[in-house]
Length: 202
Image (spheres, helix red, strand yellow):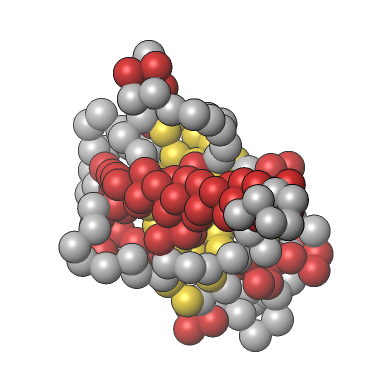
């Protein structure tokens, strides 16, 4: 309907995670999309999403409706997001794990809480470090990752700028991508017309 209303000449259906990286101009990152209805973790390496490593969780499992004891609702969200990030790194090819794990990009409506992001990063770094407890019933997925000398200081967190809302990053990235692609198509069409024009007819 929108394409017809605005008379779009072409349309493309693609993934939001890699598009959001156009806002910061980065080709590689672990995109953590914490929306209000779901949480989606997508590793992106060299502008290509590693879809076999993508993890998605429903919001109903993120937070408890009522906190139990001293637990906060954010604790449930943090645990779920960190576990999903850990699982996404485990599913990545071995040579991709460190580059992706060391660059984290938060998007989505729930990512606007700085303290929540700090807690997530600290927990995530501790889990994929070889120092994490990998024994007993609470054995971590970190036993399959083993990133030596990895800590929270190893992680670069990309900040798109305070003037941008976390909920708008994917839309802005898609606009940048669409504009670049349209420019490329216009240039190709112009070169094609020039090549088809016989000498002397200009």
